[in-house]
Length: 138
Image 1 (spheres, rainbow, N blue to C red):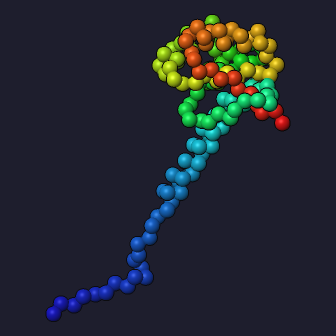
Image 2: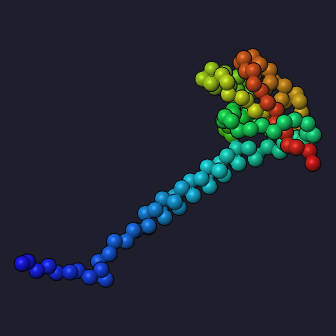
Image 3: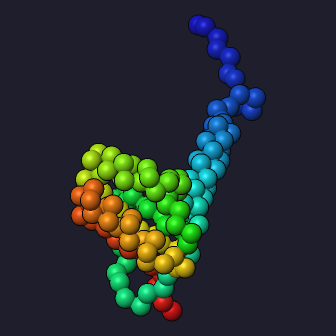
């Protein structure tokens, strides 16, 4: 008969190394924090007018955000664009995705004379879903 040696479990054991999992989780946390901050920065640069009326919109799809500053600067999704390029840019975006809503975020101090040309260019581009974004009056 053959003799067998028994290895005790004290020196050898199977352990799960969780260090790579912790590293991945930390990278994901940092990624989501950065992406969340970028989304807030895209919207936070304009002080919105207050309104007592309106509806809360849900985020069912990613809208095209058009920002109009108090001095008339126009931005699309946080990137500043001159008023000369606005019509071409918005036409191209609308052609690629015609059902995407366009949200106008105008600064509370912007006169309507600054917002009117933006709305006219959206109309001329054939955009049908335009929403004006305001803050709820408290």
